[in-house]
Length: 153
Image 1 (tube, rainbow, N blue to C red):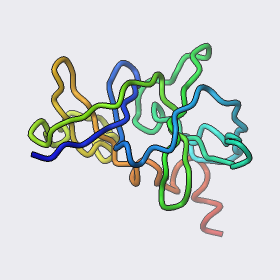
Image 2: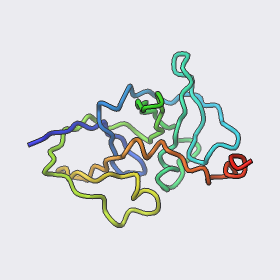
Image 3: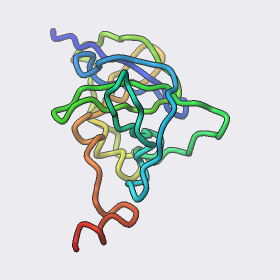
Image 4: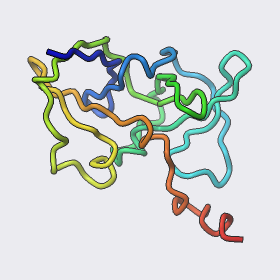
């Protein structure tokens, strides 16, 4: 029976996770620089020990309610084919080991684009763990905001 490990985190009270081997590190809130004309889910850029890393606000990306102004996000820094990317989350959970037997396909009730970004759910004792597909999460559609007009010129 195959076991998988997930780095878990919370967004709007829901438990999400990405596979441990995709995680570089977890850090507290970092000051961000906004990027003009960037797609809405791009929270900004952070300086991670001299490396400039794009921060994606997962609440916005998944279509969840925006974080209150006084709530500072945490950073899950993940490794992608293009380098490091920071996922802005509400709170950090634990590393969880799950059995493939606990896996279910993503619920059809997931709103909007969230259905494309969640690869499935794992049934835990007291809740569901929503497994995110990192490669899809970090791919931004050009049609967001005003970027399409710039890319067509």
